[in-house]
Length: 362
Ligand code: CP3
Image 1 (tube, helix red, strand yellow):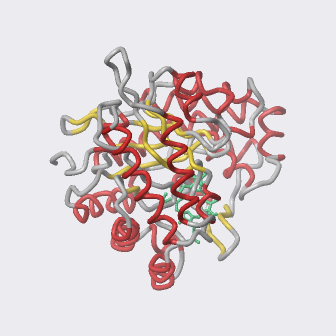
Image 2 (cartoon, rainbow, N blue to C red; image 1 turned 90 degrees about the vertical axis):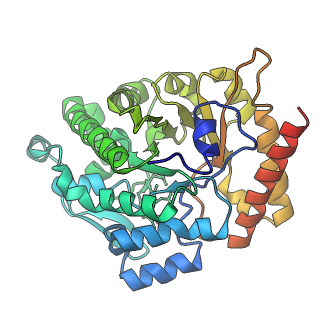
């Protein structure tokens, strides 16, 4: 399969020079778009969208029809993997995800297995279908949840405010927690490699709940298993490098350690200054982020100014020593469902225009 016509995103991930800073948005296909809500109504539910390759293709492409984004992301969810393990996923309207059979005791943990990847064929079919529909316009990002973030949902059975149940298991029965994480790491690595085989051109691990862990626990229960997944990933497919991205929400205290996990790109939330983060990792990895998604509630001129501030903070990609840094512009977390779609237009235009101007001034 040929390289995408617009390979700016892949080049930035690999710290190669680009004409401008590429951008995409976490949750770019979602409820802030009226056309997404219409497709979801036709499909009947979120899982109706995600399990149909046709619907998944349609909604993956929706944000690209509106905005000049530099990457597409597979429309799916991180919780497809525990669902395939038999935990019984459902999304009640307006309530978020729920598992019918959470892992609450030793017997449930002992029975847990790496799932047969055939149960996730609908995801790989969607990847193939999206690649075909994209026709090389932009690269396609595949993704999965980190072993720890998946374990949070698998043990809690739903989202949580305090992570009481999963943290109780972590401290009281670390042996059980390590067994879950070991199985999750094997499942996630196999799942991402199957996405790569189906045509995903970059892969991202979402460690959305890594930041709730204590220092020490983060390294043992989250980062160690992220590292194992990254080490097991296919680095190349069809002769092209497949960059990997690791995003730990709340991970700024451990940035140097995360940057050493083997991934090409580290995602950042909005709690850190991007330029300071860049100095901490000294361009050993590319950085992705990190505009506060709430900025998008402000008027378009404020959105543009805040986007320029993020780009200015990163600074020139070109280094004085001849090397190159890499920046993929993104939000610091998923786009909020109440975001006015026209504000995203202002964001995309500002990122492209200002980053081009910065390079021209070099
Ligand atoms: O980024 C994209 O456009 C690709 C699609 C994508 C979804 N979920 C679709 C989705 C991605 C990359 C995810 C990842 C995901 N899912 C994460 C990690 C990223 C993050 O936000 O931290 C997590 C923690 C989940 C679990 C999940 N899925 C939750 C907590 C919820 C409900 C809360 C919410 O935001 O609605 C979902 C549902 C979900 N996944 C929706 C979408 C578009 C909304 C469902 C709907 O249409 O009702």
